[in-house]
Picture (tube, rainbow, N blue to C red):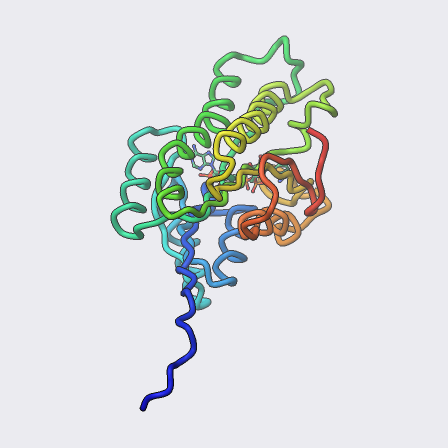
Length: 244
Ligand code: NAP
């Protein structure tokens, strides 16, 4: 008689992540850290040459990273990546809405050109919203999702002050989006959180910022890999709640 074997363990499916604006800066480092945890990571970028080069460098280190072109201001581009994820990966577990621009100079809010405001909100808010709309069905289908909206301390309503009006508006609204979608998705195991990486040495953060991209990416990757009983609808810095 053959002795019964141990009960079949429920295999944890391989996780798939998508990171926007990942050819450089914090997004690139988030890809590195997620892939180092065994997550198959789609490094996306609006510039195909730069994105391919960045993904190839990580893949050459043995990390499970692939490239897909994605411009978060382009509806067709967002639809293409969502179709690719559904068709080729069959699931999407982690979405890091990282891509953003900060293009205003030092002028006061009353003097900012409206095309600067529109471009900023288009990239930093409407892009994340539309991409989330397109990808959440792939998460709820499998009862698992982690959405990380990379916000900013400049988007904390509690800390609002003069300057950077367009960027601040886009991040305050991204935070609002985080709260609303987290509430709508409650009970689905799709957790939605916002995070500020602090001042990080990147093109956007400048060379004098205190933090490295490794430090900036840490809190993002933590939220991207939360356990099922993790928080949702919160704003974090350094793995600690931060004032909205
Ligand atoms: P970064 O080095 O300037 O990188 C921004 C990335 O977004 C680049 O890859 C850029 O692509 C991409 N991007 C811009 N527009 C895009 C679009 N339409 N479609 C797709 N990708 C687009 O900035 P970062 O510092 O790493 O910023 C990452 C995130 O952290 C942002 O959400 C930012 O607001 C946030 N943050 C940063 C700091 C900081 O101190 N660095 C502080 C607070 C919050 P290109 O290379 O093609 O331009």
